[in-house]
Length: 130
Image (cartoon, rainbow, N blue to C red; front, top):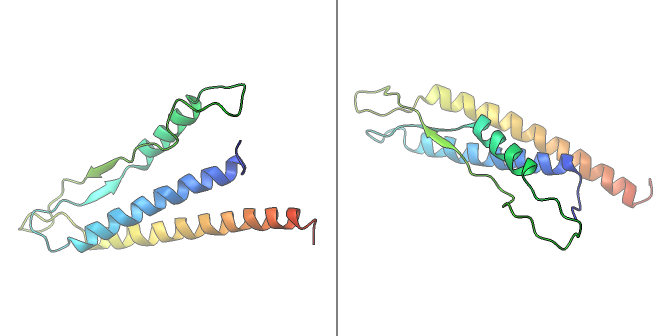
């Protein structure tokens, strides 16, 4: 039995994506001076497709005690960017990383605000409208 609605589950998947994206950006920034380092990026389309495939391929059961045959989390697709911005072969563009960081922060904040609103609504229902 699923305690929360589908919306909260989708917000949870969005937060997982945002977390992975944040880690990849932090790794890229940390390696800005590493010779030969190629920057990485998280492929959102592949992650989304994996989640859609997982949700559509879940087994249909008649008894809530049955287990799903498919794991609940999809794999993360992190890809290398094959760019060299410096003579030492480093492929980190700090302007792009900072722009990605700001975009990811806005996305994360929007998800947090939305999930807080959902939990606030649930809290109101539990209290009986008070």
